[in-house]
Image 1 (cartoon, rainbow, N blue to C red):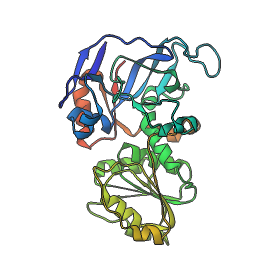
Image 2 (cartoon, rainbow, N blue to C red; image 1 turned 180 degrees about the vertical axis):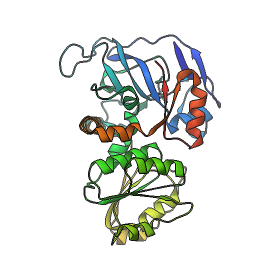
Image 3 (cartoon, one colour; image 1 turned 90 degrees about the vertical axis):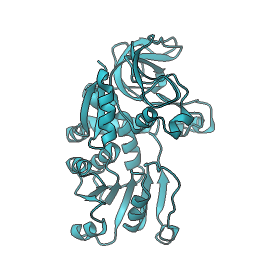
Image 4 (cartoon, one colour; image 1 turned 135 degrees about the vertical axis):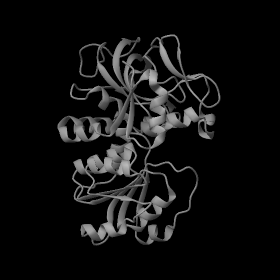
Length: 351
């Protein structure tokens, strides 16, 4: 089969022929139809310090996928029951493979498993014709979730997990960072009833995507500031909820400056290194800051599926975040598009 492989410890990837995998006990073999490109994949392709510390080549990369079950390993639940799997079923996949026995796993906090093995990072991933994953990581998709939407459920889950961290119905929401997950968060905030949604970024291209997803205002922080937008919208005291999706220290500073007393802040964007925070306003304004990682397994999956099923508008807004589609054999163009920043979500077609 075809697979996009990190063949050696260094920059680059290779699309090569490798043996088809067979599902081990409790695993499911999936024919990949679509696969989304993530910033993690760009780090792996360029072989930065993080990638060098995490990967042991050779390894098939990629972790965002939608596909079709073609084989069930022994002990995988199969049949016609509500929770069974079957050959031909269309599915997405949770990319974090957990141990099941650490304290967090046993306490129902699987997304905080201390022994997480990541698809496409610690084990062979989704940029291939076939992939095998534990049956517990398979998410059966309803018919109204098409292949493109199913391929972005991993990053959509990040957006949903972040946006649902705090109540925001009727509140004013600031989202710093309009990458694909930030734009998805705009759509979620609008769907669940935020009053005003304001997004910031340094790219006009991505800010246009945020407007299309439902933002009331966007701010290019290379030219403008957030504070005047509050006046323009008639806001009296600042934002009630803020979602930090960029990982940039300056974004966090401006975010804190524009929050009201008692505001809630959810941080998903990973910074490139440590940075200072002025803790005075955090303390005196009684701000709450919460770190977010991945998706709650599997509460987030239920919530995003149900929201997508019941809202054609939300489905259209999430689908519009996908701006570039490439066949798998043009993977290098897909990576170039994702690295350019002049894009939303990039999806590769493996069918």
